[in-house]
Image (tube, rainbow, N blue to C red):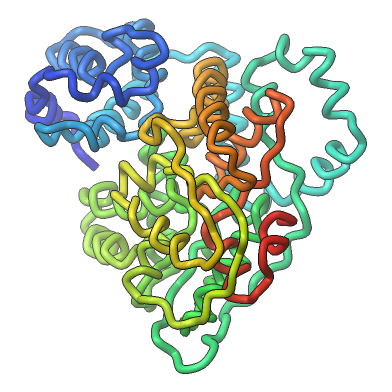
Length: 426
């Protein structure tokens, strides 16, 4: 991971041109210079030159979504992704959080990176949703008064279905073309199990043996993107160990894939793990990225539906994967794909952002929901569980509902000949 002493050079790469401004979600919302990438870089420079980290400075850094849209738009190649990760780590070390902030952050990081703990919530959460108690709780506004973060967590949580465990190996259909490892994730595994099942089936139908290591855990993405570097390194080491021995690791959650591709930087200071981390990062592929590289073999059947494709920030900006999901969707007969306006602007999910900054996240979610609604699509396609929950929750606030699916689920329905009903009933 970039060391603090390297910050001055990275900071000086910024020429303050302003190309980042119209792509920065918080600048778009508030028009405040210190809530733009170049404004935050100015604050980073002040801190690097000896200015103590003030609560105001920490607030501007906390307000950043880490969406990396500025990295895409920057003509000078400023590595804002590295700058904000180092700065977040400094904030966590130097900025005293309030008791309430410590409690919420402690709960989030004690829960979300641990699939077994998430699994324990599935039954109670399902019963809570089905009983209608959720609607009663929201009408009272009680959670909002106790903690906006708790209220956001309650609104975002989906009603999880059954989660059958994937076998440790799914055999290729027909001649084997590749052997791939598959990350099952945390939230993806426990709240969107259908995405993982669809991913494994699609890979198998395209001729891949799919290895699903039983002892894999959290990849560390949430920790890495929140300044918890030591915690992220521990998760990264475990992930590296779990996937050694496979040629390619396929990931179906944008934030996870982005983090795993950064392992070389994260573990660069650890001689025992640096080379292994670099090797894993080089073998990591987003599902859409891998399938386009592999090329189609299985027959595509029609899925007559109109979908809106959402660019997850850690897929489009952090990994540069934009054309591949669209190419896969375009290969499905009968499918009409509509573009969402302002695709570069984050939906407000951003890992844990919608829990720690619920007001700003809500505004961004509303903007994205309006743009999704304007497409007239009957189905939203997204490649990150946080985005799916965020946009679906924003639409519910408007009194609207839309079916949400992952690219893998569209492909699965097409390859198995399930048609439109195969995705609209997910």
